[in-house]
Structure formats: C-alpha cells, structure tokens
Image (tube, rainbow over all chains, first blue to last red; front, side, top):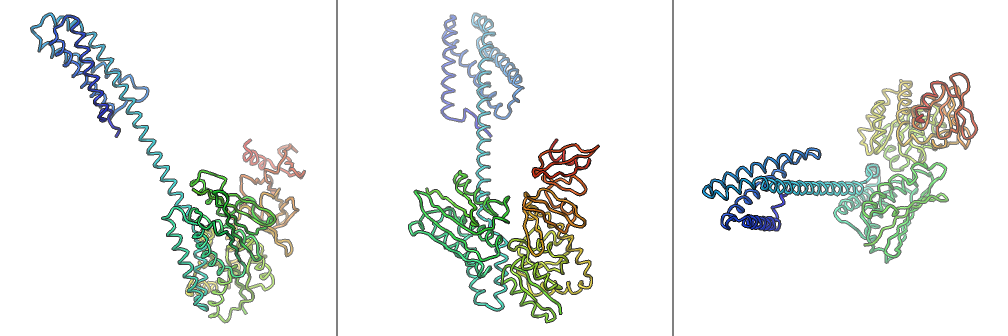
Length: 345
Length: 248
C-alpha cells in the first residue's frame, strides 16, 4: 500500500505550519473586519482545525480509492459535499459558542459563501495533490516490481545458460564407463574420477561469479580427457596460452560449451581425425580465446551457421556485459573459428 | 549364420555390445562401422539380419543412413539421449536401447527381435513409418541425404529449387545438378517446411524463394518461372496454395 504523504515527519511539520499560518491570516482578516481578537482567533482556529481534518479525511480516502481517469468529476462532487458539511458544522458550532454576539453572527452569515469558496478550493487542491501523490507512489511500486521481475528473470536465465550440460555427454560417458568396467576396470575407475571431478567443478562454479583462466582451462582439460576416452584416436586437442594470461578472469563454464560445440561440429561434420585448438591471449584489458575446429563447407548446415550451442554463450555474454560483439565466428578453408573476448573488470 | 553389424561412432559403445553378444554364439558380428557412410556400404555388402545403430553420428545420423539403405534390415537403435527420437520409437513400437543399458535390457531386446524375425515385412513397415516421422524432426528438416551409386550427398534444403515426381522416385533439382531419391512426393510434402515449399502440382514441389514470376498458361493453370529459367506447371489447386503462402 502506498504511503500517505503526511506519514513523512517533514511533510507533517510543513502541513501543520502552513495551517497555523493560514489560521493566523484568517484571524487577521476577521480582525480587520472589526471583529474582536479573541473571537477572530477562536473562529479561525476552530474552522481551520475542522477544515484540516476534512482535508486529511479526503486525502486518506484517496489512499484506498482513486477514481478512474475519466471519473475525476466524482472527486469534485465529493469536495463540494465535504465543503458543505464542513460549513454546516462550523456554522452550528460557532453559533452555539457565540450565541450572544449578534454583530459577529451577522457577519458570520454574510461570510458563509466566501468561507465555502475557500474551503472548496482548499479541499480540491489537497485532493488533487493527494491523487497525484498516490498515483506517483503506485507507479514507483510498479516500476520496482518490474525491475525485480526483470532481475529475477535475468538471473534465472543466466543460471540456465550456465547449467547447459548436455545430457548426451553424460549418458555417453556413463556408457563408456560401463563398457570399460568389463575388460579394463582400471580405466573405468579413472574415467569415473575424471567425470566426478568435472561434475564437481560444474557444481562448485555455480556459486562463484568469476574464475581465472588457469582454473577454467584445468576444468576444460578434464572434459577433454573424457571426450578423448569416448572418441578414441579420432579426437586430439591443443591448448596454447601464455603464462601471464592465466590470472585473467572469465565467467565460469563459458569455455566448455564453446569447446563442446567445436568438438561436436568437428566430430560430427567430418569422418576423419579431428584436432581442436584452444588459444588464449591477453590484449589490453581483454582476454581473447580462440577455438578452432575443422568442418566441411559442403555439408555444414548454413542455417546452423554459428553452430549448435553458441547462441547460449552469446546470450550469456550479452546478459553479463550488455554487448553483442564478444562472440565472433568465422568459417574459412575448412576451419571454423570461434573467438571469445572477455573484458576484464 | 546370423549376421550382425554394429554402427556407432564411439569404439567403447561398440565394445559393450560386442561383449554382451558373446552370450549368443549363433550371432556373428560381420563388421563394425564408425559412421553412417561405412554403415551403408557394409549393409549393402553383407546383407545383415540385424544391426545395432547409434543415432548421433558424424555427417549423417542413423535415420538418414537407414533412408539410404534399399531394404533396411532389422534394427535395434542405441542412443544416449534424443527426445525426438524417443518419441518416434514409442510411437512406432520400435525397440531401442538407452545408453548405458544393462545386460538384462539388452537380452530382452534380442529376445523380442528373435520372436519377431519371422515377420520381416511387419518390421520393415515399422521402420518405414518411423523414418517418415523422424524426417520431420528439426534436425532433419533442413537437409536431404541422397545416394547416387555409392556416393552419398547431403543437400541443404535451401539449395533445392524444385522436386519432380519420377515414377516411384523423386528428382531433386539443385544448382549442383539433379539427384534422385527413392521416396514419394507425399513424403517430401510432409518433411519440408510448408512455409518455404509448396506443392504446386501433382508432380511438382517448388521452393518459393526460387520463383521469379508466375504466368497464366491455359484456362485455370499457370506456369511458375524459376530464376534458373526452369518452367514449372502450376495447377489451379497449386496456384491457390501458392497464393496463400506468398500472402497474395
């Protein structure tokens, strides 16, 4: 629920001060019409206290109910009614208190219309300000909700993109282990450990925001070792990087899907042996990683263009950096090149 | 002798099938293949009774490979994870093994095959129906695999200008030349994206992006002229379909 404007201490002080000033001005005005100071003050304080209460009433009402855009005329009617009510009560009370002051009562009767006008204007003004205030509050809340929802969606999306571990990879690895368990149990055990380390790495990295290139390459090596067991002699890999780059940072699990894509693209698009190369260099505040795989331009599907899983990586980079130019692909002379650029903080 | 061929791109995946098959001395593995190309060749050569076939393989997948075989043998599919394929298997009650599979599950699949092997026609019909279903999968919708003699070509659908009925075959016309595939027009009408390909005539399906103009021909019929200059007859019915796809 939107906060009332008078819930703020500052606004409260200003509200009270303004009303006191208003009351004093009215008292002075009455005095200048030759009414005694005590009566003028009493009249002014009483009527203004009532009016202020009426204003608070209408303002508070607007907190719970605001007319539709084209129904503001209801507000006008409501103000007219309240101004009338206020006038009636004020008049009754004042005549009761000052029943012996004939001159004052005469003046009071004559000033009724002016008092009504002023009360109506004041009420209308307060109503308008309140309506605006509450609309603004609602808008703010709505914006906040929208921002929260966007943030949540973004986080969920990032989480999902990070999580994109191919079930294909997992089940095929388990099948390889199953095959090895019969005749080469030592190798089966080794592969179980590699797979465990790899999976543990993926789980652990969910919590961290960024990892160093050195760590990511180690993790990648585990993945490549598993793939090499699966595909045997058909797959070989080359990883090339300079020592000073290893401390540079990148989002976790970013490299693996790109390499996975390169392996798939390479292994499924040619029937010969396949060499995947990964190269990391640093260029003024950027980490540049280049991944290359062979491909066959005659049969590679042009619509797949950037390959199987690269759109997820692209999306992730966009969500993290707000840039669309951090992933580039190039197909040339039977070699498909994917280049990742990671800005350093 | 009962001949078996294993087709899988992962050596270890073939190894476990070999191991499980040791319990069946009446079955002989005549060849192990690393990919669909080798598979097509080996099937033609050995005429096996049963094949174990992986789905995701280099160049052409297991289904595409089967399409290229004239008379597919009985198949037990082996796959790790492929939602689309699994749905197709379920729909056509074809047996499949999900990797990693146990010896018990493997035995059951073989058991089923042995019971059904007398009825070769029924199993062939099942395989044909399965292939029609998977042909509409997103992975296969954008290319056509054909065999010319012993040469296998993979044609991206973008390059297909038009298809022409030709007895029991379909001629596929592309910039690289013409290919023939042993399928029906109905099959291609189902497989190809209906937003790109329109069957404009009983004997013709054409890709709309290759059309340059459509001329009236006789009463109620038209001629579509392709960028290559080829002229394709368009029936009244075909013209209506064409107009709808082109949004005229």
